[in-house]
Image (cartoon, rainbow, N blue to C red):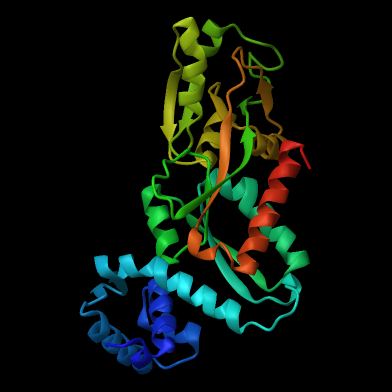
Length: 306
């Protein structure tokens, strides 16, 4: 089949299906009927000689071929939009866009929520929704257009050159405890700090970083509990003598809200890199670029380098 025989609208529909994983949602997004989307999908299957999507319950799951096509489709459409856009300065206040940011609970509190507040004032039509970050699955979501940003606090490996990485800032660690905790307001010895009960939050690498600092003293943390979320860890710390170590930017928020006490760490400062990831197909998307710049600006304010 020759290029002149392919309707560019088919690529728009393929992109919507990759993003929404649903004929109904894609139809709603594009303002077309579900039957029109189904007909286009049949045509796409014929063009690419592949099923492209298989049904799994209410969702459409992309085949390996569809996942291979996704980055190229995003690049083509971004280029077409840039070509057809009137030649006038970008104005975020006039944009109507929806983005999805994959982040851990900590990343949502540190960056995604403050970003929303900033966008409400500067670009009320630009919306950023949150989706949970799941390591390599989040990278695939970037490739398929199901999410547009990943806030990485877990230092996930990024082996592929099509995933862009921007280091936002190096966060430090802060250890929190209930008001009146025996270690509040004083610096414990490495042995006393290690022997205290610690709460490990599964989505954060904080305990591993503490253990790295304790290794020079041939010590490791005493883990009292492993919990699924920062919220569970916070409630446990408030109701016990267990210590909760978090990224400093997040600890600052919780310390104020819950009147927690700080415990000075007897360790060398551990760096926790906070990074922004996105797919290369959005490199030249002006609105995406602007949101990236807003995230970078927030990060500079948090790190005190603004």
